[in-house]
Length: 260
Image (cartoon, rainbow, N blue to C red; front, side):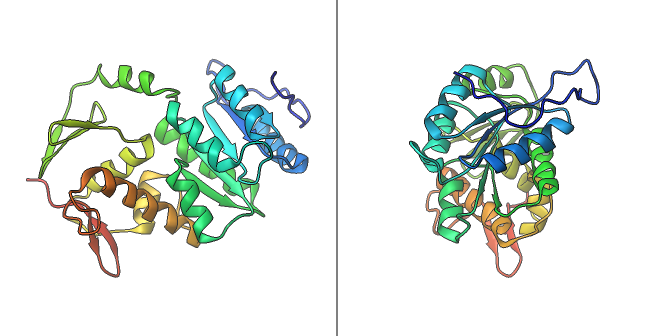
């Protein structure tokens, strides 16, 4: 059963009435947080669904296939970590963790479980809106692994070879030693940014702005980039601890070898 939105129902249409509004699922056991987020997003034309615990959220997700999910970590019945992991197993939908558990291990764990972004409580509603817009603009509407694969097969474009890794940019597919490597949308966005600036050192700030669509404002934003780089290395490098593909540039950030 779907949870009722607790914010006032506003008769606000998206900026273009012929567009389908983005559907956002807000998962938080604090009623005040649900109301604030729902109210602000409804004002900008989003369709909002809410859930008070992880079990309810997973049920709503499976029934409605939202375009983006906002998850608190400290949820009853099923933790935010587990909910993130369960959603990521079946979907590439953007996930933002919104939590007061803002220590470095929690941030990194949430990202490793598949979240695309982490926003600390207390938070700025405007900042959250900026991050939502950035993720939806970059990723768009892709709900399932199958849907992403179907979309990929209809494109033909540039294929890049770096060491034993083949990257089909248009199809958004990656192969290593002939085997398909499955990347999340945000992992691919990061790789695509490194390809775009291959041979050039990229700072955390530049990578976040290019791949996520918003600037670094807190230390947790740096963790977002580092964790995604770590995940990419684990999938693409022979030895992630001694990377040759995604190289560390001390004092700056990362770079990909120049593509000839």
